[in-house]
Image (cartoon, rainbow, N blue to C red; front, side, top):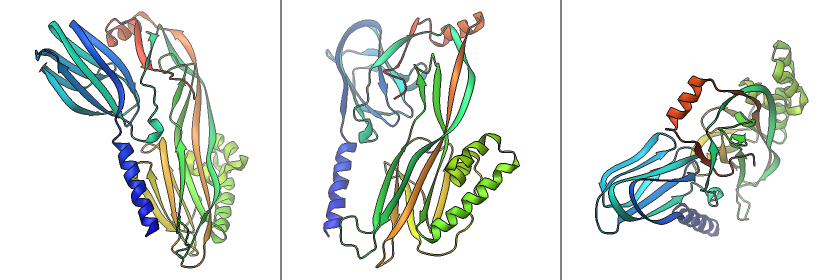
Length: 351
């Protein structure tokens, strides 16, 4: 009962956080014509937008867009907007545009609900950078393996009396793409193109994993040029799976199975299984973010040790700048409607 009470309290805490509204802006605007303001938002944010014209007069239009031109909200002849919710599907700058044919005085409030506590302190400021006069072509690409997780986890039996019971949760994070100094003027970038994980129970699962390692090394003789260096560097079967999608993890025998589920940090189920050895690869859906691997032991008496490995494949690119031709300069100016500077998320550089 105590275990379920703890889960219930934790659930209430997560629910309370998920509804927490963080102030972005609380402004009073007195303007005629066009007024634009810009703020940065993180992927998964929910915007809550409120507007009230003080004298109950109409504002010609209110338009909200992901900069520069992805419109996500529009309303005409506005006196008031109450608790308008807008979901953000990528890290971006959001532009709020207000048009009034006559001078209007109105209050606006902008709040955000982040998708997880990790992004609670996200910087919603923006930096203004010059419109590019050069374009950036990839000069060099390096492929590398990031070891995200490599741990031995203890999963207790059903009869274990401590709070964790027969479950062990293994959190991990796959990093997002980043550009230095920013995505408009990149000198270099880092991008995760795929990742994979494996779990193996101690004993039979470990033996089967070693067999997969041996098979992976033999694969280097079939022309996997870049991969060969990575595979023989000690990452083996899991690196081959993450990089090429080639699995040497054949169906293992029965033994002390471990049940597992893979979820996002928002408890969206991605995958699940039940075996002494399991593995999986991800390339597009769920390529970045925070994840939880939950291990469950249905043995009544005996605990199980489980080896958890997570690898990500990263491309690191360096760029060369070359001048834009006149046609390309014109296209940039048209896209950004004559602006000399454009807004980007504040601090959009490598962590």
